[in-house]
Length: 243
Image 1 (cartoon, one colour):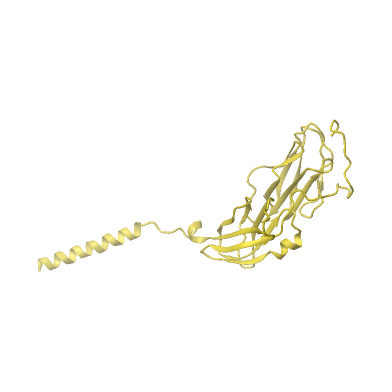
Image 2 (cartoon, rainbow, N blue to C red):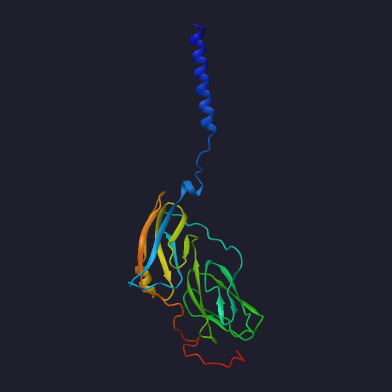
């Protein structure tokens, strides 16, 4: 009788210990990226055999109906430096509503402008050591030039979603921490016409497993597309001593 009672008592202790261990064991956090998000993978490849892309590219996911839009707050100061007749960096991806500074670090005048739908502006002539700023208040691509130096160009891509990736040439895109839902995949490749980019858009459904879209064929782009000055005409070459 005592042996039977002892066996039951030990069995109860074992069950109790197992219950405590189960309660104390770490459980997946429903709010953590590992348990509540997915990934999207793709790779851009040249449409022509033997060609290599040498231009920047960006992909981003636009939430569709029923899929929540994640906040994309500004994180720091955005700057396009003008130095040695160049904009640095050449490409910036920023949230809607961001302010971009355009300091002039050259020993001559610059005149920064953009005539594209992303953000149209003309900062006028301003001298070395001074700076001007622009607020990018709507989504879109802004191609930015200098009205004095035609070799200067930059791109500001303004987005309302943080679900984007910038490709390093030759590497694949990986969009991480994507909440499950339905999205439209958008692409931007410098120098590729917008109608062509629009034709590459596609619907993507994201769940808790990685989505591999494979290779996406794109035509070759140009890093320095030909452009007119801010008046729609040809550039006038100015002496280096003045500009």
